[in-house]
Image 1 (tube, rainbow, N blue to C red):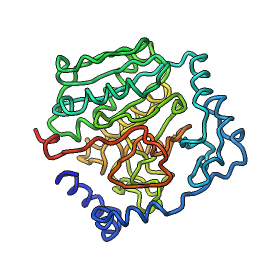
Image 2: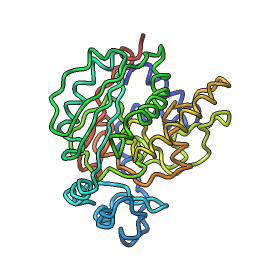
Image 3: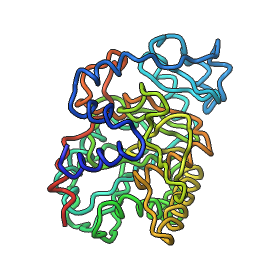
Image 4: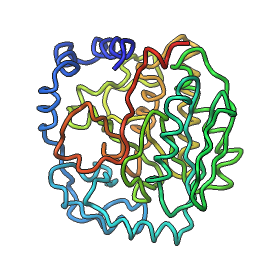
Length: 337
């Protein structure tokens, strides 16, 4: 974790988390281990047939194969963990339905050189195998996008975007870029959209079981913590302001049908711009706005932290498989002009 990120994390603590707990979490692997022992809520449904089904195959989910974790939400959406699903059933169903997936990723500035090739190559090994996939790469230097060997039914489209002077603006303004791309291109070619940060590496199956109408991801650092420690934006002047919520979601991965993702990105962009008009910036930028949106518009599907794990957290018995990993970060270098 770079100096800038450590400073930001400490500021986050001062704004909402008890300082002692936050500092200890940063410096103490033993505390992170103890946090992993905190029990999660449990699913109250007797059968997956009681879920609000995103897909007919959801009725086959084994909600009680994972008694160690929460496998459904209070609004009856599934939370997807290893051991709950039959991957073949999902793959067959989505092939029959003609599902196709757009993957959006931003590689601006040094992020292109450091992360993009690894991200794309690993996606070719693990992301939505067997389904048509189009990579939508947004970058300030299109000619530097690496030449990736693609499997059949998979393609890549590169779009030039401006490089903002602040990484926070790059992060926030991606919402408008994704919305515009859905309107102009994606909706004509794909049924679903998944949006990723580029500084990640696929290491295991990230498949069709993750597809749904509206898909959110449990943040790896918060899924065992009580709500009072979630880092929602607590500034009542911001459109991202939240007093309470359901979970803390990670903006490094989100998705859904193209209609759902378009609605989310449009709403987040609108909120970001309204904040800018009064010189307010949400605590965690687009992630804060995404959490507010997902609280008001409940996701139909939630992914466990298996789908975006940070190995610095250490061992967790409930993380049985790593599907996507945080890549090593060097924010001091990457986020400087």
